[in-house]
Every structure is written in structure tokens, then in C-alpha cells.
Amino acid sequence: MNATLLHQLRTLIATPSISCTDPSWDQGNAEVIAHLAEWAEALGFRCEVLSVAPGKANLIATLGSGPGGLVLSGHTDTVPYDAASWQSDPFTLSERDGRLYGLGTADMKGFFPLALAAASEAAAQVRAGKALSAPLIILATCDEETSMAGAKALVSAGRPQARFAVIGEPTGLKPLRLQKGVMMERIVIEGRSGHSSDPSLGHNALDAMHAVISELIGYRRELAAAHHNPLFTVPVPTLNLGCIHGGDNPNRICARCELQYDLRPLPGMDMDELRGEIRRRLLPLAEAHQVSISNESLFSGTPAMETPADSPLVLAAEELTGHVAGAAAFGTEGPYLHELGMDALIIGPGAIETAHQPDEHLELASLTPTITLLQQLIRRFCL
Image (cartoon, rainbow, N blue to C red; front, side, top):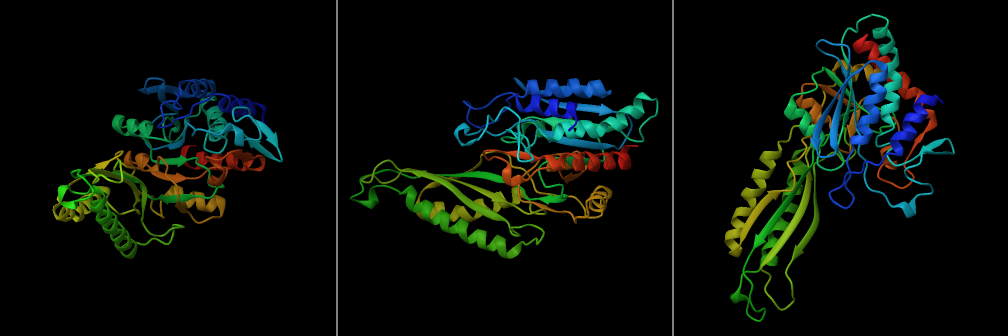
């Protein structure tokens, strides 16, 4: 194995960069970004570190100049971990059974050393005085696992500008050109408390929530009947009732109840239209139960993405891998790169099934094929 690649991967795994909605877990990624910038600059990339929040940043490393170009993109944060369930230290790269183990090996710190190795050919050409036909950009972001703050900051800044983007999430080196969106929403019902012996003394928020849940389940059936895309493993939009909280005692009429749910739309479904339709359906329930019903988004949501089947990037990846581009069952930063004007393709080493799990790993056998594939894409779109 390439000693430089192994050193870089070991360094990244040893540098914690957990992002989490729980502040006790949440960390910055600044040290990871500093390592990546150092290694990219050594190859000849121009590096810009963009601050997103205290201790959190994005990196845009650019080789060459001009319009168009190819982005190799990944996120630098990981999810939390359960140390007791790991067979080895999550922050020490461990090799056994033909695999490299460590937190973030597959999802997705392991992609960066492979991208840098693949970029070395183009970097050597630039050092030899030969210009690239289009720029090569390595992009590293923060907080993909939580808020997508890094990707959103890029959209706000309008950068980077390129024609194509490869997102190195773990796909077993099979190209994916679609992904569902995700919305996380909250419904809060405010009623009036009273003694449970006489229902007329109050307005029960739990009774109203029962009607709300029935309405949502009915809407879920309607969405599944109206929208279908066979490229997805689950070919319909999903609506999951995630958690509910209400009331405080059995002998009090429930004055407040809250439901949180997620909705995962297919490409072509508009999130604001979905939110508006749910509000419309719940409005008469508030009147019928004499309660107030509010709808809030837990975050702004990530839209669905579909890169055209005839995109040059999709066609190239299909030709080089021998696999028809499919659909991701998980979320990525692809929609934000798409918003910046890029055709985005999700393809990288490792299996998504090992991500967010104890003993996350990369197969050693996947490293060289990944570098080769990225080199071929760089040659096609940048050299």
C-alpha cells in the first residue's frame, strides 16, 4: 500500500471531528481541514479555507483555472460512536482481515487520501508547465452528518463553480445519480387542561393528535399511490412518525402534544408544496377539536436530486464501472452542489452498511480501483 496514502488516512482517522445535534458530542473539523490543505498545497493546489462556524470550516482546493471542471467532494465530519462495541480503537487505523478499520474510514474520511492520490497525475502535469483543460477541485465540508451547514454555506457563497462533481460517499464504486430529499417536521397542538372527570372542562390535545396522525397516515398512502420511482429500493416517498410527547398525568386533560416526523420526497416533489398541503389538511382538525395546531420545520430540509441519465459524468462513470447509475437510499450534499450548477454523481469506496456502525471499515482491495476510477474521470474532464 502507498505509504503516503496510509499516513494520510491514519492521520485523518486519529483526528476526531464528530458532528452531532447533542452539544456534548459536537466537535469542530478545523484540524482535519488543516491537514487536507497542507497535503493539497504540497501537490500544487491553491487552498482556501472558508469559515462556517467557530472551529468549523470548508476547504476549496483548486488545481488549474478557467470554466468547467471537476469537483471531488466529501465531508470531514463523522457521527458519534459506541466505544464498547468496537473491536479496536475507533481513532486508530487498524488493519485486519483485508480491511482498514476506523471511525470515518468509509463515511467518508477515507475518500480524501484516495482523491489526493488520483490528483497527483494532474498535479505533475501542472508542475511540468502543462495547463489543465479544466480545473480540478477537491472540496471538503463540515457538518454533513447534522445540519448540512457546510454545504449550505457554499451555496450562499456561490462557490465552487464547476461543471461536474463526484461525491465520494460509500457506494461500493457503483454510481448513483438520484437521491431522495428529507424533511424533518414538528406538529405542536395546544389545547386546554382540566380535570379528567369532565371532558367538557378542557380541549384534549391528545385527542386532536389522534386525528392528526390518522390524517398523516392517510396522506402517506396517497403520496405512495401518486409517486413512484423504480430506481429506488423503496420506490415511493416515505413519511415516518418518529416521536411523540404529550400530557403530564392520567387524570388531567392533555393541554399540549407534540409530534415529530420525517418525510422523504422523490425527485420532482416540492418540499414547500408538501408542507402547504399538510397544513391545509390539518386546519379543519384544529377547528373540530377547538385547539391550535402549529407546523414547524426542524431544519430547512434537503431537497431530492436527480442528475440526468445522459449527463457526460453519468455516462462516463457507467462506462468505466460497468454499472448503470442507480439511486441512493441515503442523503448526501449532492442537491447543494446541483444548486451550484453541477451535475453531481455519488460514487466511492466502501459500503454504506458499515457507516454509522461499530467496526466501520474499508476493504483494502477497493483502494487501487478507486484511485484508478478517479484518475480516469480526471483525465476525461480535466486533462
